[in-house]
Length: 161
Length: 297
Image (cartoon, rainbow over all chains, first blue to last red; front, side):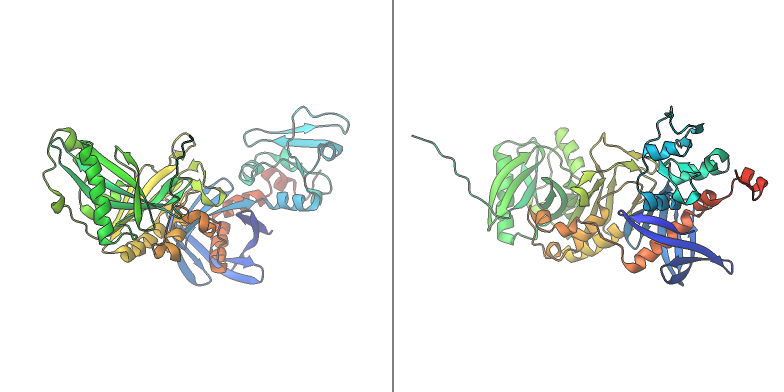
């Protein structure tokens, strides 16, 4: 699966694969062997395409803060499903959301799944609900962060319903 | 009869100020000048001493005038006499009767601890030295590290200090007001630290500043460190041809900079590896679904 990171609102797609026991970063037409070695303070080195550079890294949710080459950068991880749904359909409306016959709404701290009839109103407001058009109309997702979604993925099967 | 007040217009003025010390005995000395022309939103962000704009004769004149003002007022404390400087002339602006943010550059070039002198003066001790004893050695520049976004009008920023590492070495001084793990909030002034570099001359100070700013790591909250580095490398700044409207005249200094292709590859490689557990979890099949096998509802 291709993933994307935003730098100053510009998305950059990457794919990280494994080959012969090492990670390969796929960028457009490039394939670059890459490895990262950090201490518990986030200081260390990055080796990419045979070149090693010092690096400091910290993460907070979907935000990745990197000090590299004498400058500081902030990268935001963009969830591939959210990106795909946004590209396919733009912002979903509540009509589309209700028309699917089932909604699930979640916050980072409180996941839930609520059955809903097409004509009924949902008791929990689903702000900015996104619709994943690639899933044959069976999945609706809230725009919760990828980190919170990942944290829930193994314990909240209703999110995958 | 109408009365009219006319004030001379100074185009592209510099802000130059003179540090003074006065004691109980009436003795006043100056500790030379500071150039504080690089400002944003009428607030200084880089200060240096000596000023690259003054020749020896003008320096002697402006410093003598400042000391004379303090002497005439019977001033007793550390203070700063501020001037507008342009077209070879200087004009009195105001006097700040306190220690100022930019005082470390004066301490670096004179070797005089201004806080210590304030305490001695308050205790009634005489200065114990004369104007001839005050010497200048080398060049010092102070960079104010702010939690702000220069590309968006220098708007204050907030966030946690996830990682903090300050530069060190010869000619490097950091006055710091934060610790790792602290939250930068909007409740306080956004100034986080001061980086003061000194060298035998301005060029060496600038070289040390460039290295120190590159080594200054503060992650989690957007700061002006990269902006300060671009400013410090700007050819007009390097030439010392600055004025209070410098940043308005050179908006490219504050603009966002895109990473070079090589840096972009490194950033994406590091981010992809660092967020791998996150992505692996996002892509993982939940245990319950794995147990079901290929069946789905």
